[in-house]
Length: 120
Picture (cartoon, rainbow, N blue to C red):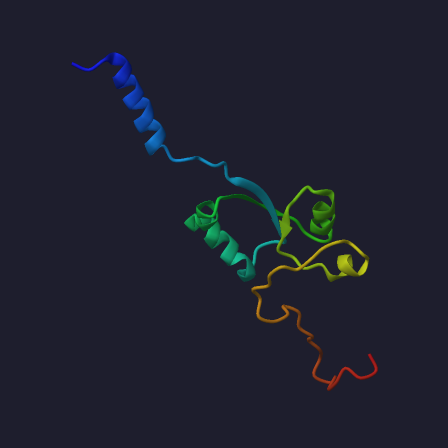
């Protein structure tokens, strides 16, 4: 017959030995500018749980214009998927850390009588 104290110590030892440390997920806030194909990777990563698998609890916030740059500087958001060149030219301490768009999404469209952009 075993002693109750030995059973309690055995249970405590087993609990400590088999317990897995639980870490809180990092809460991050990411701004994006609106609907569009370029934001599909964000939605896909969120819906498939890729961010949670990496320990990130991401909140996506839709912001337009220069609001994301101001929110970054104020600390209201942690990341923005919009690249605001004007903000960096004005001296805001922003850095581009990744870009998954292979080319600029900006295009120059003109009437047929304009053959070049000379004199613009």
